[in-house]
Image 1 (spheres, rainbow, N blue to C red):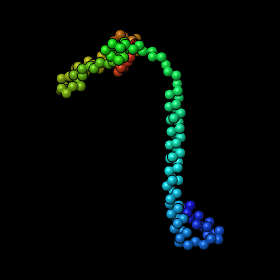
Image 2 (image 1 turned 135 degrees about the horizontal axis):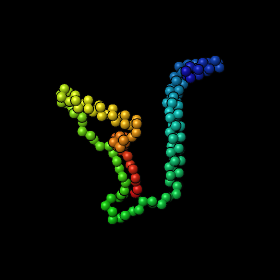
Image 3 (image 1 turned 90 degrees about the vertical axis):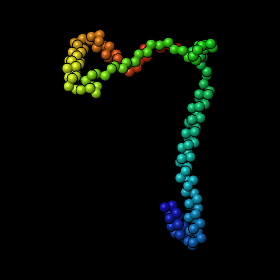
Length: 148
């Protein structure tokens, strides 16, 4: 598009167009096309590098902090922590969901459903200790108390 406009402007200004002028100017346009396409990418890379250098300089020029963790040269581990952890435990699968015969375990499945309904009713009325334990066990992992 730029080449066409250039040739129209050149011819309207009173200059003569011949093959030598046309082919050399087309080659010149092809030579400057690639650098002009890469210019936005280069500017973006320069600005990203500038931002990165500013961030790195802030970190490198920051004051050092005191070491809050005591270093024990003769310790067995590099860092020792004292904490209370809790995680949910795996429960054995119900007999109704196992690969056994479904006809034999219908009674057990009904009893399990009845127990779940009773637990839901108890939760609505007031929380029983077993229901509270079930809610606590639903959390896959928790860190209760932690100190280094």
